Length: 384
Image (cartoon, rainbow, N blue to C red; front, side, top):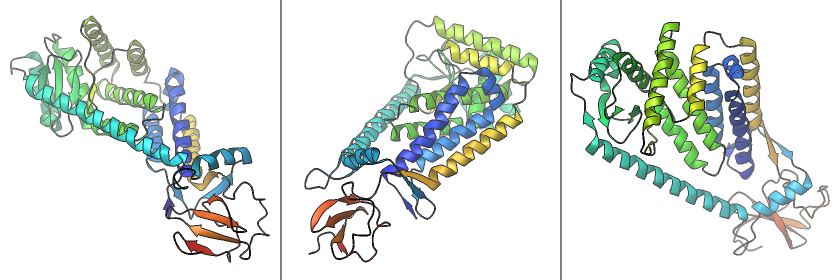
């Protein structure tokens, strides 16, 4: 049996944020990232996302660890009803604000996607078959038949190549994008790799995750880390031997120069798109360094330690729940003197209970495990 509660939510956030912070530190250290390995970085990201998308408590498995009394009192004040006839709490208002934020960010995202879809439909143009990019892309389609679903177009408003679209994928090139066929091959092959690895779908799922947890400040580094991991994986897919890596590094430099020369501001990138590179020197330099030094295999011992740590932490986040004390705070923890002669509960619709002692209301509790099982439990609205 599973249950969603405030405690299960912050346990999922605790695990996910530890993983995101760990990745943030790893990406700041080139040596650590090389020991880490890109597949392992992707696994840590996936574990963080899965845990935050499953913010539930497994009642048959979990054990409560009760927080100190001051912390429990603060959480209790936040969770217990205090407004509108003891029907709403600060947590109730927080959930309403959370839901409102989800709706606002979802509407903004959908509007941006629709704007991009209209721009591509009305302003993009097919490249002539004689164009160098068309010739290169036909060669790629012969090498990899699955890329035949992708359509090659130009779009005036963009300054850097990108792939866009889940149902109808497009590789979009800036207008008057004059590069030689070697650079075009690396660019088109890179964008095709995103399609082959379903990176667009993954990026949409990350965006959905960030819409749900819009208030979590670590969503921004999560998106950046995801983008870098996806780009690095595509880089390694395209450039495998040392000569290809050198040519690919020069291609990245060429595109960055082209991007920096652009005068007008780049339009906001839609969710279902991945650009060849961003207007960020640090991210591009990091990609080049990791690509050129990737001949060094990841450190196996380091990976085993990390996997063990991550798996243990993932399981423990379900097994042990840091919980505010479920006994009202003005009552001593020894419950032997509380029995059917002086106490009763009223079961609420949300799975919690109103607790009464000597016919006086004492507060809301969410667990009866520490109380005498003979204490009467009444339904909400019934005559006591």
